[in-house]
Image (cartoon, rainbow, N blue to C red; front, side):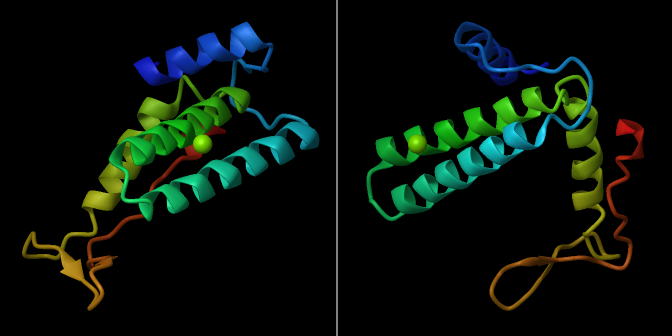
Length: 125
Ligand SMILES: [Mg+2]
């Protein structure tokens, strides 16, 4: 488990917020709350990015990261996230073109090259 997830696990324990021990979907109410928290904190990051205040931006990014790590814990995904991140990174890197160079859309978005392969997360079950 990475250091941020460990810190958020400490927070969850101190505040009585659930942590599941294996990958599974919690009840609908918990899922709804997590969705609301992710939405609220995402919105606060979007607002902060337009504030021109780097400290405010950093704080809101931290809030969102904490909520995301907390969501990992509430879905019991903490022990598989290293593998998830590795596989998603592998998939992202497969977007490079056959010449090893990135392919960009006009607005800068990264496009998938011909060798792209989707992340395989079937190990989660
Ligand atoms: Mg916030």
